[in-house]
Length: 140
Ligand SMILES: [Zn+2]
Image (tube, rainbow, N blue to C red; front, side):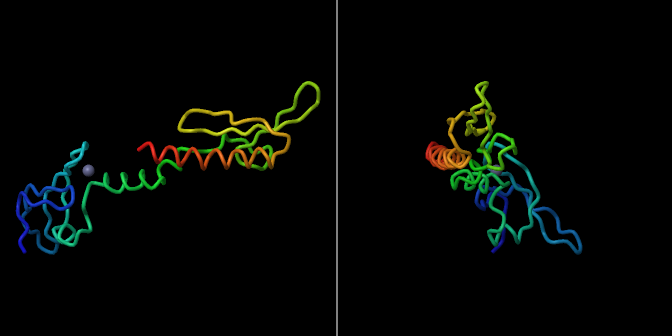
């Protein structure tokens, strides 16, 4: 099986087979058929084995669909005062204390609600995070 210009491997299209360099594996100059259109030299063996199928865009897409990428977009508003992620203590003028559940979705801060205990606020935070993640993955 000889790899030639024009052959495709996943999203790669072979442009040229580079001359053999002594002591180095044979490489091909390839272009990824994605928005990025990245050019790269890839080992011919990696192409033939299917070890390299894209510039990385394929893996990113799979990660997005499986929710891994979206999961990184959901984070607690940083505040360690209560020991519960996503929970902030709030003391009112009356002296009453309440616990706010908040979350960052990308760069947006969202107020989930106010609860009488940090446990309840944390539960609300976790529930919100799970349902929001599901929603974001579905919207892809
Ligand atoms: Zn690509």
